[in-house]
Amino acid sequence: RTPIDVGAERENHATIALVPRGSIKGRIVVHPAARAGTNLDFSSLMFAFNFTELIPVDWTLSLQRGSVADYLRGSSRIGKHPNVDGTFEFPSVPEGMLSMLDLSFQEGWFITDVTLDGRDVTRSGFSIEPGRQGIMEIVISNAGGRISGVIRDRDNNPLPAARYVLLPERSLRSNRSLIVTGASYEEGGFDIQSIPPGEYTLLAFPDDNRFSSAILRDPERVERYEAFGERIHVAAGQAVGVAIKVAPDFDR
Image (cartoon, rainbow, N blue to C red):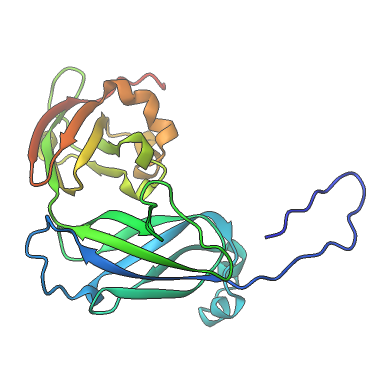
């Protein structure tokens, strides 16, 4: 990327330098506290990084998919199946800020830490300098916690189909994949499993389209309701029970 200062006059003879893309080489390891973590086939895992800004995709790849619109929209993520031993490589990574998006693996597993060149980037995200290779380690675990309980309305009645959002500590909220949303089932019950240990805030809302899953993953929209949430500490292997009322509807 080349910054250009555009003023009132036409800017002629702009020079744009072409630089090689960076790359990532890394491995996935199992946290020491994980249960039955030996002999895992890491190739059945799928993980991805999400670009937090719009970047162009390769024109040739867009044409292979048959969609010029993909090129015009830009790429939003890069994904990978690692090798059986957990090693992986991204040989060509565009410049741009990335964060861990998701993990598709055996039930109960989650990512605890992501480091790049020895630096923890779980919270901050990361970018790869042009022409440089970054060394990454992704730690996974299944020693998570669980939160279950009942959502009630303001009159203390169980509320089915209520919406909830589980917010991690503030330093992690810029990575929206770490924000968990869902809806209660019959009699207002809910159950959130495989929660990484840490500090959380649980908020509940009525069954209303204004509180869709997309909106609830926007920290700026929901943090004003945070005073009505339940603060919860989740430890490895811990099951927490909670009864929570929906937040007051002061947006109408």
